Length: 362
Image 1: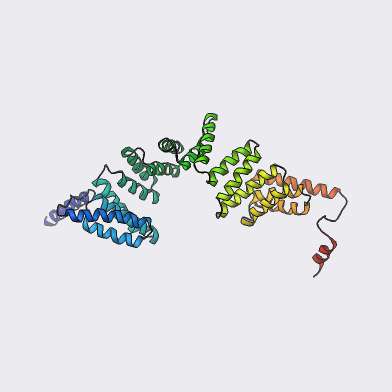
Image 2: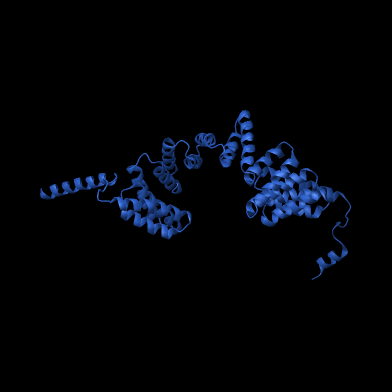
């Protein structure tokens, strides 16, 4: 009987401790005004150190802040941010969980502080808890309707959750609150251009605005060029792509795609030698770019270099992921083979007797 009573008391104590753990502890009246002021200043310093990427020093100062005033939301937010940064660098999930707990405390201690909910939302987003993150970002927006970063992160959270309607509404809200945000205009434009004719028109206007707001954004310029090419405005597309290529300098993946599209714009204007050079530059970066290989083969045919054209077309056929495009390349290769077999044999224009003898030498 004594054992039963002792166990019951233990269970009650465990429940009491559990309920206390989910709530912020009462404010400690023993924290002096001086310590509170020092902690507030330390929290500000932590933010500066994090911006400077001095993570170890930020963690050290955040520990001091927590010792001076462990009950203020500012102290806990500073500790949360510092611990999260170090956790990412050191790949330490336990430290990241500690950061979330600190952010939880700050949210509970001051439920009217948007900073606390934003920090926690960002932590949840980084942990790929996108639903929780979206809830926190929505709370930030309720407290501060024009909070730029919360509006932005909410849109990205809905995108990660594959919720297109919610994502579209989030980008709309961001553009309405911050019409000067080039990326928000661009992202909303991409969504609208998949919609009704009226939305497509609005999307094109937003895309043009994004290019005006950030004239060196290679993604925006590339998308505008795509629209111009679709309307057979190849010279305008070329001008946009050249600007985009300059803006994308140092980003090989982007440079390869832009060189390919620039080659296509130049090819459409009949400048085959220039198009050939652009495709070859693209292939220097990405040797397996199937579309560049295919277009290069077509350009070489126009330039009369049939042997090299066939070699490039075969490479394109073998790498092309689209069955329809592969079939069209195969049909072209068959036609070229048939035409070649129906003509009397002649030496290749680019192969002289010296080349042939060197090829046959041991």
